Image (cartoon, rainbow, N blue to C red; front, side):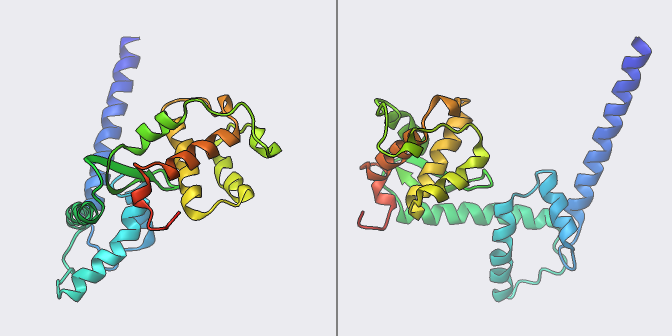
Length: 213
């Protein structure tokens, strides 16, 4: 048994060393002439997110327009520089969207959180508050149905024909419930919609919308 445990430990240590080497190799890779496979590997091991990939193009274009020579840049340098750039973007967002002192984030379909400004309450706190005293039933039959899989979110949103803002809030309500380890089956579809509508109309979240609704 001792010999077996030692062999397992050696195997795990070797795997850790290989992973660390692979990670460092990717960070040392120059961004000039890289292929999509390298980008995918960076995502797979959690060095960058899908949002980072989308942001990279804009960021690199800005650098080029500022006459920055990026030929010698590695992904390690790019990732560090991009992190600073995202902090700058957040400070700009906070400057123009300051309605309180709590940082407000929304989730995108990939699960990443995006900072949208400072508010009186976080979205998570609003979901908790607006989940109280929900109706027993709803007028539309489909709103009285249950669903238990997060994968059904997009189809449900499409079926309900929600506007962009309400669709975003509906999806976030479901994702926050999952994050809190709550069972989706404990709620009706109408409950998620009701919570989303309450948040959209709340004085705390309303300022984030530029619409007159």
